[in-house]
Length: 277
Ligand code: MF3
Ligand code: CO
Image 1: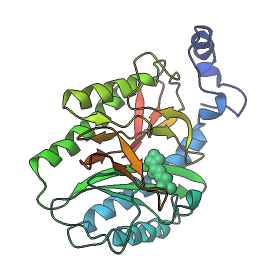
Image 2: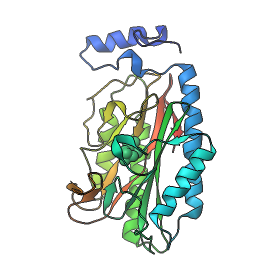
Image 3: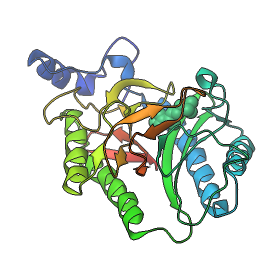
Image 4: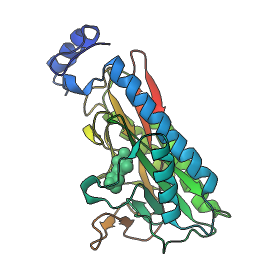
């Protein structure tokens, strides 16, 4: 595919015009990545995957989340890349580590020690040669309760179900609709106000991916778009609060646990390709 900031590639131009005429919101041309850009973003994703793979090896009861942060910084810079969170809107660390009732944006700390039974989300984002990648995984520490393990597994399944909706000429809302339906079937709730996003040339681009959206709503999916799917699923109510002192850490209001997995996906001519997981 070849395109530039101001015009659609010939391969999608007619279809985009057709759906636009029907009143469906279409992505502006700059959200469609070129083959060259996709190649560079893929390389960034490979680093992000390597970082999460290394975290997987060290994460266990007894280590601090600061240790995870150091691991992320070390592995990322060993690959000649930078951790995107560090300094992003004054975020102080290289990674987000969100334990149990922390929904997202937990800040690593020497004082926070992982213990048996914890569930933790490690959210990594990488900048390689100016190209961004972003994905996160859950880790179960030691002997995790049946109940919490199910939350982790259902949340992962939510991502897979969302992913199955990704193909060109459908609308973004179908992703959240599938995710929300499955989470609710399991008695859980999904955070609506924090969600996925376009990514690649910047850390956070359009469109916003709401994981509680309705079918046949939202932006048209067009080949060349890259975005994340990253539902935050709460065992209890969806209500949350943001830590007033640090301005970042998001916690459930009812203190019940929350889980999240994040993948990065490319819309292709025939469906999708997962770039990062
Ligand atoms: N990685 C998060 C996301 O999935 C963004 C975190 S912003 C940070 O979009 F500054 F906290 F890193
Ligand atoms: Co993200």
